Length: 66
Image 1 (spheres, rainbow, N blue to C red):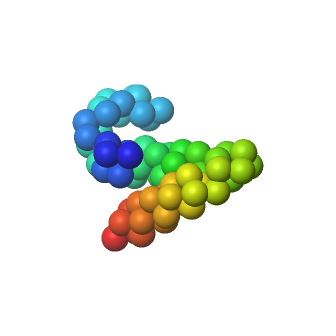
Image 2 (cartoon, one colour):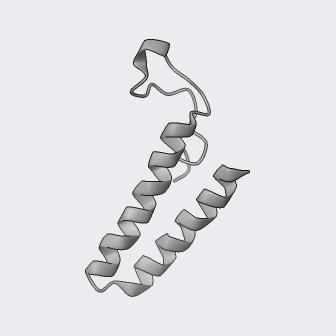
C-alpha cells in the first residue's frame, strides 16, 4: 500500500514508454487490489479485516482523485 498510492519509478504494461513515476494506472491497480482483498476477506467471514481494508481502499481512492 505504501508504494501503490503513488508509484515511484516503475515499469508498467506501457513498457514501450520506459519507466514512469507517478503512474495513474498502477495506482488504480493497487487500490483495486486492496479493495479485492477486502472482498475476499468478507467472503471468508473475516468482517473486521474486510472493513479495515475497505476503508483503506476508500481513502486511497479519495487521495487518487485529488
